[in-house]
Length: 339
Image (cartoon, rainbow, N blue to C red; front, side):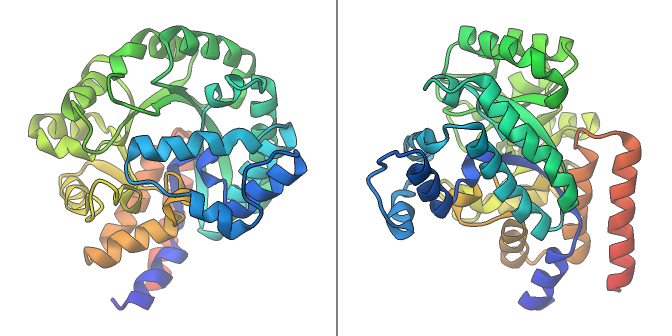
């Protein structure tokens, strides 16, 4: 396929996005707009000046940019605007279903109420139906916060349980293994929520953390997680259990110039339920179709491989079986028309 043919195929392919931080969709123009609306001096007055601040080289330096940028998110309307702007982009990228991460502790720790955050996000989720996007929220614990903070956050979430499909674990992984939050994950499962956890790329103790998440905590998905290829036994376990692996190829150029593409292809060939997502697109410079295209063009993926990534995204999503079948049939229809 030519580059144009690959892009055209991806652009119209139905897909789900399962690894997307809504705070990571804060584009420079929206950040500036919200700063002005809320009378916050962010030290920049133009979109280009804001864009230049989105500069980092590894996970810690990224987080040092990422969290301060959230200061402009103050009101329910701000969170609505943030989520709805992303959902419009998701619709344009033929995303049919999305499960959006959000980080309540990053907001409650600076005095924004949990209710403000989730109400704004939920309203955007409801309105996304008019865009043809089925959306859900996944609440993440910040792993560099305390276990007690996670417990309090889960307690705050319980009145809004029907608005949340699952819980995740993100932020700085160093010295913050998954098992630190085993009790909170058990409590979330007992409340009927799904569970996933970030196992970031090329971190200290990556394989040990993946083992904890899969074998002890029993997560249904691992986010990033491509280091799993270093342990064939763990790969076999993940395949047998149907574990989802939510990779974000271009998002990881700070640690791997080849975007872990070899690992993604190896996992795909072994039948692992790996899929492609965009992570923090406002910071990493590409939404989901851009990520699909970057991977497909660099590693010469076939249409069948690209389509399998999309099929996997629906298979490991947290939606009912009938809904999964509906979306899979949309892929079938698309592929039959593309021949």
